[in-house]
Amino acid sequence: MPLSKATWRRLAQAALVGASVAGQACGQVRSENPVVSTSGPMGGSGGSGGAAVGGGAATGGSQRAPAPANTGTACSASLRSGTSLQIFPDQPCPNDAQMRLGPFMPQATMNQYPDTYDGPLPRCVITQQALSGYEYRYRFVLEKVVLGPGPFDPKISHGIVFQGSIADPAPGVEKTPCGYVFALNVQTERTPLVTAKAGDELTMAGQVVPLANDQYLAAWAIHSKDGRLLYAAVQNDGGSVDSTVLGGLNLTTGTSALCLRSGPPWVTLHIEAAGQPSCLFDTEVGGCCTLWGHEYLAYALGVFGAYNGQPGGYFFQIMDRAFVEY
Image 1 (cartoon, rainbow, N blue to C red):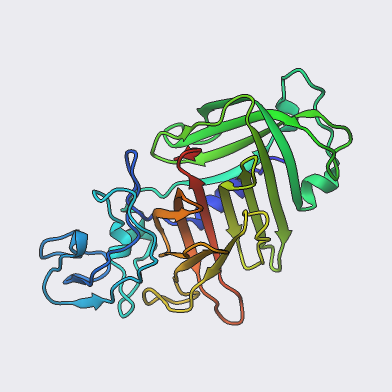
Image 2: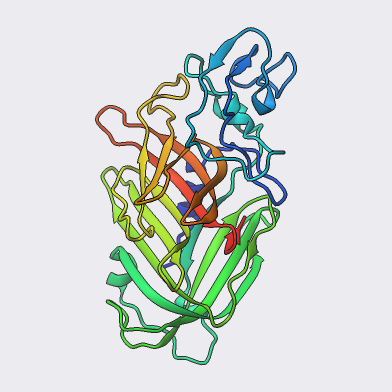
């Protein structure tokens, strides 16, 4: 069921502007060396006005501890996350106005459009319970993939449409095989890339769980034929994500605040999978993490720790760069 514009905007607002991401590369999560700033969290890059890029240091001010070895790495040595390099645990976090000065952090949701299918099969009939009842897994054979404009600001809104067939019987699907459409609605200043093509066999999976206080958990994922995670986006306001939806990934929030602010603290997001080295990502940054022998691009947006008895939450996206990238 397509998300409403109000819901889309809510998802978008959950992701503050952050990491420096441009071209075909992604930014480093944070420096592997101590970084010093003379002007606090929002100082400029390098020189005497702020954090030095690449592990160098300006003089004076507060020093940030070195990053752990398992911090998400740079997809390209030429790009760093300016915001992350300029956050310090003993100084105030940037405010909303300061964050808006930075580059735009990509955001996405996976929507379903059953009525737009125009292929040779009958359209799938899926019960309302299946659409709103919060967990699905379909073997999906692609008929076509279309990259085009999205439903919002044409400068940053893109749609990646996956049209194909739900091939096997599934809960809530009246008769299979049948035709169906998924669309990845992306907001990004980059040009999205996708390598999926007609004939590819995927698994489309999702989980939506209502939480207290009109909050919710929503997870969307695409898996390869052999079950490896190709793409996932998660909006989690404090629930528990089914790791099988994410191909075995476990996402947890850290306990140490990255900077000083009222309300829920900004923290790191921990990405873990059995038998794989774990990766850490600061809030509001993008970077790469190697899993199962493949390089994944990840964006960690709005990562908040536990506060006043409430669990932490995050908006997170991860993608195999050989499958899709934005």
